[in-house]
Image (cartoon, rainbow, N blue to C red; front, side, top):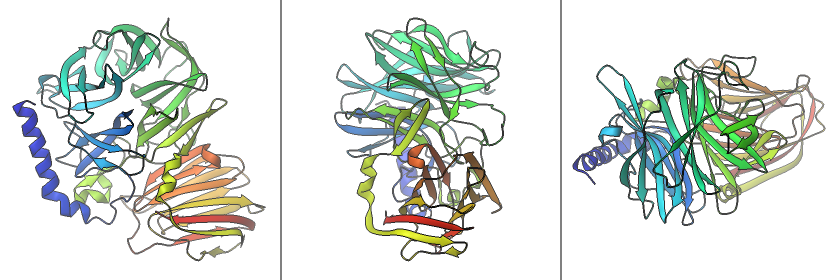
Length: 480
């Protein structure tokens, strides 16, 4: 550990101690999500199961609730539910990362955990340099930086970041989010036999290729993996225009399903689909665990989208990660379900069968709280409209004639209502994980997901149900 690295660590640890009481006093502090000890959290990084333990690193700015020269924070878990804070993994201590250890990934090779990440460098005029860097560890806790393994190819601007590495056959592969000189977002592919020397294979896909027209000025956080004999490219494009209910957030995260040709380095794919229909979801990353599950976690936030209005800022922290989701493929659509281990959180089950709603707003005894799981199964739905109101701050509305499901919430800035909507057809079931200041709603067995932060009054724990006509519900509720 260099003197500069140690200095940066001690400064960050001092910041945690300085504001610990102020952070923990926030009533919006979450109960069962990964969140920063102080400052700003954003992208999940280096998600891996290593020697049986899950590791989740994350982009972290300890010194303010805005973005800047990022560290890598670090949590570990044996079960994807209970997370233990670990020592800081990476600090921006070297010349090739002095303005931030940006996002990246982790792989196991040669008995080591290998972290690949982007070293961000800016000069006094704000001109950017980008380096892809390797750090290694024997224990998965303490890391030694091996330096730059990939410099910027001439085909791209310095918006070249977020390496995701995996092995296929005898080679290692790396995808990187890029922008070319025509300001078009693309995913670049590299190949290596030793994780140190990387060969540029070209563009996997992107804006203004043979499969896409205009599709954003920058693509971030690519992740390419195989699932049920198909190849999935997850990516976060920036610069998509709103199309009806689609692309409502400032930046998007979604996926292509296709067939990867490792000889040509091209992905033949279908259309882009958004991963999440809610307000806060970006920069997801997946890992493959020892049970063969493909598990995804995202950042419950979006860059440049109302970040300055989150009320947690006055308590010196902001943002969280989503709960882990297991991915499966149904045709060309990803299905996302909460990992089974989350059932460990459940306490004090309350269940009702065949609850009748008939045109009035009502509560159901025991169905309330500030941190809970709620499952709803719909039967005999003759109502045009069903509504579920959470703590007088968020509302779920299903409109049967149009087949549209909407999540509404009070805006952070002025408390006016805002909404996100998608078409689902018939509503069969909802599964909600509600934390003190977040909602994750899985629709029809994970066919769609809505993720959002929300900030209700601390004393309000109410849950209201309403319908415009006859509707029968099966209800299960657990405190979490």
